[in-house]
Image: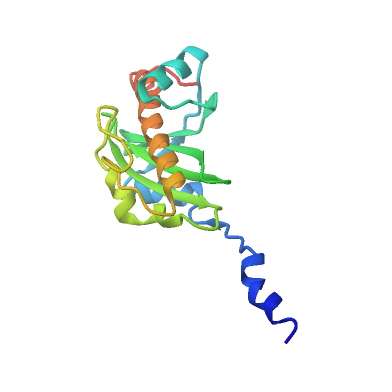
Length: 184
C-alpha cells in the first residue's frame, strides 16, 4: 500500500520514445512519382545569394547550403522534382519529401520519418492533401489556408513553412536547371 502512489505516477514518469521511419528515399520517390521510369540525383548547392532569394520569397530561412534533389522522368520526359528536407518538430527533426511539378505546383508530400512522441497526425492524408496544387503564390497561413492540428502545432507550422520554402527553392535554383543548366 505504501508504494501505491509511486506506482500510480509511473506512467507519467516514463515517456515513450516513438521513432518511426515510414519511407526510405526509394519508397517515397515511388509513392510521389509512381509512373517515373528514372529518378536522377541532382543535388543542389545554393549560393548565399540564392539562399537570400529563397528566404525573401518564402519568409522562411534556408538553413542548408546543399539540398537533396532528384529529377523524375518518364521515358525521358521531365515529370518534376523530388526534394527531401528536414524541419524541426517540437524537439526532433521531421524528414519529409515533396514532389513538385515542372510548373512549380505541389504534386504530393510524404512524411518519411517522424521522431516525436506526439503530433504525427501530420502524416494523415487529408492534412497532407491541403498542399496539393499549391505554388509560391498560394496562401500558407496556418489556421487559415492550412488547417492546424491541435497538439501538433509546431509540426504543422514547420512542415508548412518547409513546403513553402521548397517551392521558393524550385523557383530560384531549379527552373534554370530544367533549361539545361546543371544544379551542381
